[in-house]
Image (cartoon, rainbow, N blue to C red; front, top):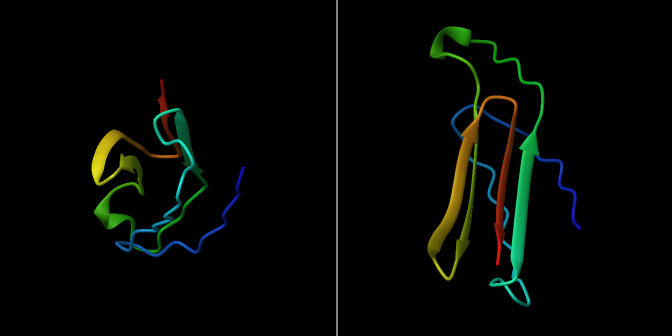
Length: 73
């Protein structure tokens, strides 16, 4: 399992690409954190995660504090 701490910037996505030995078996992504944007006029911060296999999105989720995407077969 890999843990990645990435700097966050409003409006800029964090993209992490991996090659899985067997993407049809399972994949999981979790993103979380406490965010405080200097300009809260744009509404609350949000997380979006998605898992794509060979360019096809197989799962996606949106949340405000913690988001988890999981693909299992």
